[in-house]
Image (cartoon, rainbow over all chains, first blue to last red; front, side):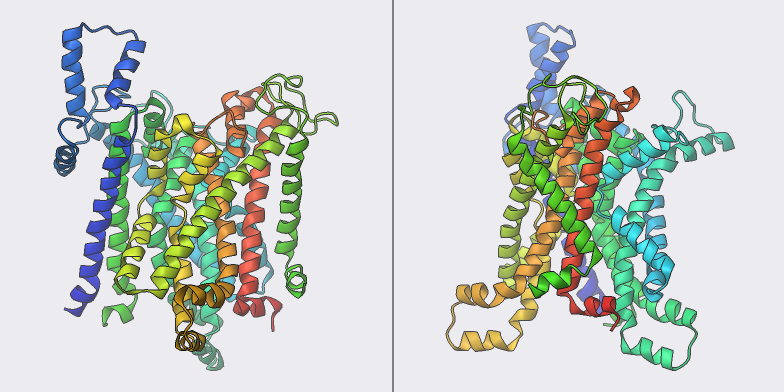
Amino acid sequence: MTFVKGYLIPRLIQYVLVIFLGLTAVFIIPRLTPSDPVNRTIIQLRSMGSYLDPASMNAFIEDLNELYGLTGSPLEQYGAFWTRLFKGNFGVSFFQFPTPVNQLIGVALPWTLGMLLTTTVLAWILGNIIGGLAGYFGRSRWSRVVDVCTMIIRPIPYYIFAFALMLLLAYVIPLFPVSGGIPIGRQFSWTLAYFLDVLKHAFLPALSLVLLGTAVWFQTMKLVVQNVNAEDFVQYAKFGGLRDRKIATRYVIRNAMLPQITSLALSIGQIFSGALITEIVFSYPGLGMLLYNAIITGDYNLIMGITALSIIGITTAIFVIDLLYPLFDPRVRYQ
Amino acid sequence: MKVLKDLFEDYRFVVSFTILCALLLLAILSLFSPHDPTLWGTAPRDIKPSWEHLFGTNSKGQDLFWQAAFAVRNSLIIALIAASLSRVIAVLVGMVAGYKGGMTGTVLMFFSDVFLVIPLFLIIVMLAMLVRERMNLVTLGLLLAAFGWSWDARVIRSQILSLRERGFTQTAVLSGTGTVRLVLNEYMPFTTPLIFSTLINNMAWVIGLEITLAFLGLVNMDIPTLGTMLQWAISYQAILLGYWWWIVTPIVLSVLLFVALYWLSVSISEYLDPRTRIQRVGA
């Protein structure tokens, strides 16, 4: 019971409040703009050369107002916004006109999820293992070499790093395709060749995400391990003559993992933003690319849909990690 | 002086200090530029780096050396505006939340948690789209300042929390020191180094975000910054046309800047934390 009261409920309240505030921001921000999305849509349609007579133009404007949720007072709009969210309906995209936003996101989401989950987990595991070993055997030559490498990679932003990697491995040494998720015109099929093609296209964006992520986890893990190393129980294990490898894995790294789980929860938002940018650099057909097109065409509904979905997705991911935390740390479990 | 001497024994501090001095020099040189950086056609086009044009020239007919000087200067200006403003917010929030605590503290920390959890990049993109027409160095700085404070407020708060429990706080309060004087005279000396190291990190974050926003076309492309410089090179297909010097210049400059800022902050914060200092010396 204390677990529910002391751990679960405060986190649940926070989870709901964060989503509420985040989505409210998504509602307010586009409404601060002086330029009206309906007007903008009509101007853009005109510039494409379509002509409508005044009567049907008025009907069209009303339709658009309805679509963008701009009818009624701000409070009514706010109410309608939540009703639409609960129905999971984000309206119609402008950038591919009558297609619903949901459908566009549905097509893009598997690409992003696949890329993001694989690279995040891989980077976290790699960084923690290498960082843990480097922290424990800090004096050896290889750990210093890796340390300097990560010190150089870590501060570089996702965009610059992805771009530099693309220049190097797609233009200078053309090992991998420059962009895309699959060759243009290739139809989906359950064959090995298709699968290999997907992997080949995913390799460069994944590599840049994994390298950057590993560098970050390596650095923090190394620091944490160095701190745990100085604790009494590790000294005791050493004096007790336990094997080095056993001390490293069972005593040091296991304890150092705990703060790393918390940091994973805290940094998911950052990793997600970085993944979006990396997708744009490599024209990878996920949410990032969709966002880029939405920005270029000024497609508010699409941007709102992507942002709302990301806020819900990321807060949920953090909430789940928080809930799993007691499984790893008995001290939280029995409190 | 002893502090500097100690710091110079760390190779990372030496490297980052040298790079930053060189980049600052470049930025200062922009004051003596022979050309207006926004004008086109002030130099012959697409020339490889040579003694006359140190970094080469681009397809817009601009000397890349002077472009780079302006770019570094403007990126640093944005970073300084955003980072110092967000430091003010972070210090205020962190100190109030740490010293006052109670309901105010809980509410303040909840808001900084919200900022940590929400994908800020998307919110910043939405806001940048709104002010796209009026985007300049200052608006961009303000925009990024509004979002860059939450983590550092948390860090400052935890330091204040530990300072509050120390004996000298009790002494000061019991001998009648006001809250404002207590914070300014007694706490500031402890937190200043910390604030400085978060300032450097935040500057790097701002410069990186500026480059990303430029890539998305959300900043004013007429103002030369590291981001717009790279973006012009990409939009003129500099890679395909083989004008490597145009694309390599902003990338190398920004990588140098990021590495230098990061190494500076790491070496300073390691110096401030005696535990890691001892480990490094090997005592």
